[in-house]
Length: 427
Image 1: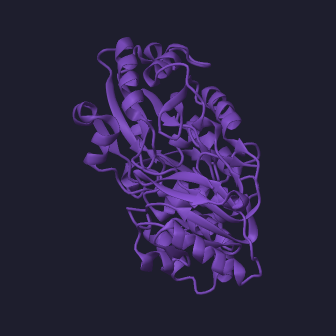
Image 2 (image 1 turned 60 degrees about the vertical axis):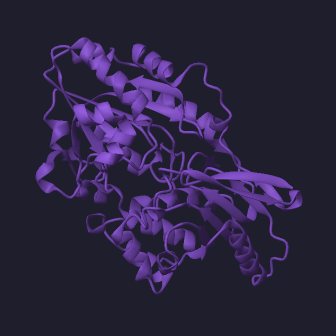
């Protein structure tokens, strides 16, 4: 028997499978990588030796204001490790610099004070100046140009009306931007809903280049690069983390050069070969990335890359925050015919994109090829309203999967397990 322990919320789900039933296990090498130094030392080294840029303390000299773009509560960025060092480095170069931390919520709900404390620590959360980005607040946005795709590039004025714009974040595989980090802190991080909707249009999401691990030829990435440049993002500090959300590498400096160095490191760790199977078990890496169904689609796309057509994906995600997007939920709930719903999305022009359409589009793509069973804390009626199947536990999910496959003539299904679906690039 093979024993498995996969992340689920702030805990784990444990199960066993007979050896002969396991086709393979797809695991990022980041989970076995041993960092040469502590988290704090890795970040300190990166800041002391920036890539393609002067030190942050040098950039801060002569500047009156600085805005730091920081990831929100849905991302496991270890800001409690990174932010103190960014603040110290800025004030080392300019003790009087006026610093604002701009929380990049993208299209997510606003981050709460409790989440700020959990993310940064009580001292920073209560002493530093914060602005929570809200993409729907048109009055907060300033136009900085036109995206290569043709959409207007509008971003938060706090990022425009500053002498120095920098960002912190992390680098991991992303299911349509290719990789997270770097330029993504600007678009969608602090962009207007208008800009995000144009960038996340159905045409781009449908592109074969808008996939996990792909940057070259990716139209979404191209727009994001433009936005970061137009915003004058001067410096980034991005980290790579392991399964325990600990820093194992850090990259600081120029927004593109430092990001690409980090991407190169992550690609070596995250790349895994597909092991086709009738059943694929995946997760969203546990909390905070599995807070809702919206985010959990990411882990499902890893399973998509290795599940046999007509197979079953078992997604284990806590989803303590529910569906994660009203528009996302309603699109699926109102879809009496999945193919028709997909055709309607694909027919929409870039300027007709609706909220959460991209997530709906990707989930529909999956549902048109696979049965998806969710082991989750989300309400059963919510899950089933979205054309997903609900299982109270992993054993029930396996029994359901075998029954579904038996009806299709598959008598002895094999299983591939992806313990952390957001940490791998299946190629």
